[in-house]
Length: 318
Image 1: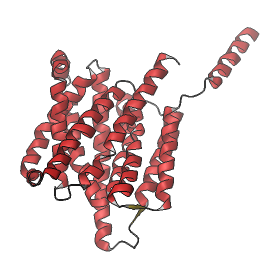
Image 2 (image 1 turned 180 degrees about the vertical axis):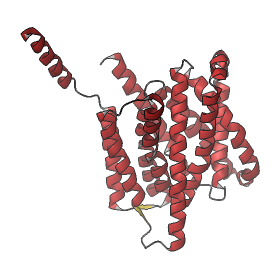
Image 3 (image 1 turned 45 degrees about the vertical axis):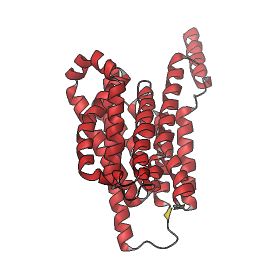
Image 4 (image 1 turned 90 degrees about the horizontal axis):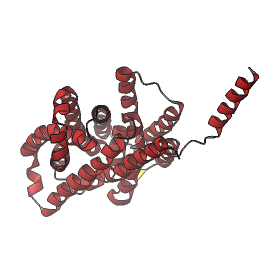
């Protein structure tokens, strides 16, 4: 396997690892129902951001001039992280873990690809299109499959709709964060410095929100343990892996590979939280896995060899 293919495969593997960790966030936050979702998002990504910034402090100092020159990109990424943290957790609380995650993550590949197309002029590849269509269709099915065993009332329907709307906002902000970090890395900034600086900017606003909403974390050790887990495992470790992935694949590929997150979230929501999924939900998860396979499994070189052979034959005949 050539080095570009190895880098691509490693990048996708890092994003998949991050997605598995992120997929536990909804279930973990459900274990602290008395904590407001704004506080959950602010604590997990605020303290997780401080950990990312602290462990990357040397690299941030080494790349400080490049970061200062790119301050609009850093500021945009930090704002996107802040919006994502607040909308994502609120979406899950309103629409359910499976639906909130499916909408938030399922819409991100499209938003990321639109950004790449508008800002960088990057064309859609057939492989990305196939993987994204399968994955997004699976996320939609997963979203529509939320079952309660009875027809939802008007209040529940409105709550779910609000959760879906916030999930769409989370998807757009997640795509913007991924795009800005990838852009910083491509400009020569180290991946840890790019993530650390972006999350440091977000942490300022997130910890302010936490100071106003996070009193419930102090009510019990269980709530505090949930906050600590979210900050250290899915946020800190997950985003370290995600940064490694962004250094090797475009933002659109990374956001599409992260469609593994709603699969993990849905399985945990059914197994541990008690949510229910209709058969369409399981079909949706299968479609997501198909989309991930399209992105991850190396394409055979046979077609390329045939094209080269045809070109060589034409050259010899000419």
